[in-house]
Image (cartoon, rainbow, N blue to C red; front, side, top):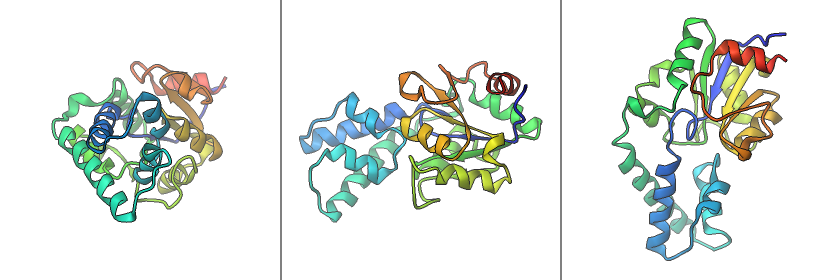
Length: 217
């Protein structure tokens, strides 16, 4: 039996664009400046989280005043934006542009459900801003991932129910949020997203018909 798909919800970082290395380098730079440890394992724990929650993981129990928190978040974001300025449409993740195009020509709604406050800017750099019917970002809802609120909001904007909506995620927090919300969930990557209904290495070659068939099994 094939799944009837009404909408797609894409996470941004690591799904629409491979911006995770940019975030990693930005946090690494901040860590060097402040003389605190930072490694890949810590960064994995930050995936899918909003800016403030990412900083909490980064601090790893260290205390910082509110003024310090605001300063560190602003500096990290500045380092990220410096790198983002070099992004072009060619930096979209493999397969994502083709899948978005297929959805739009077949009447399937395309939305974004991201924790990033830079979501619109990233989409603009990629030339994809006008390809989304709704954009949920880090400022859209109060409760961020792993709460399902951002995905529920995105689906509601296009009148789609979770039972007919697929969420694409690359982080454990994002997968948990999608599953909690009752969405069909496609994990992109490896062992971090094994809880998803379907896991693929990338969206390269992924089509709506293949998704409908595999998720409807």
